[in-house]
Image (cartoon, rainbow, N blue to C red; front, top):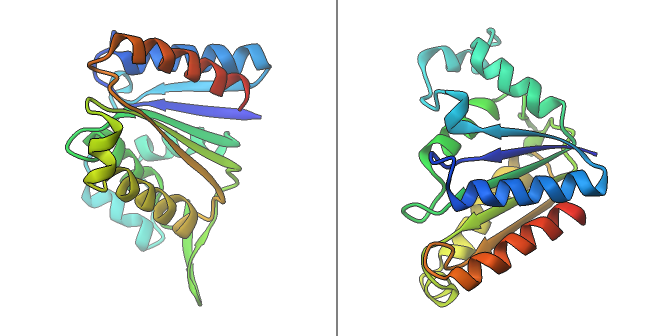
Length: 191
């Protein structure tokens, strides 16, 4: 299986990048092929521009979008590693999805609504938080984010196997971070 692993954190020394390293180490140990994509280091512009509207009129998508779409097309699974900022993913990841998962590439409209066009077998989101699990559950944040995942990846893009793992207190608890790194490695091995 070829896996595209997308990391959305601006600091290459961040815990999210450490998770990326452990996850891909696990993938490699298990014999999976993978490509890592650091959205910040790539210089990808997440801002939806007038040229991006060509997706709705049958025109050619901008070159930077086509480059990213080629990466997605070459993958059988997608993994997203990112922190929670203001109860959602970093803007660069949202913008990447806005631009790359375009109409005519990731989905089309059928008689009964959206129909997925991607041949992606699995999506895994690994999300780090500052706060504890009780806070995210009490505020409904975890459920809200998982609902958006299902709507985006399953409801629109037709990807059936979607999982979202929250790694709580990654910014505040050294012992939790150690366990999170071990989990990331295991997730890669068992992918």
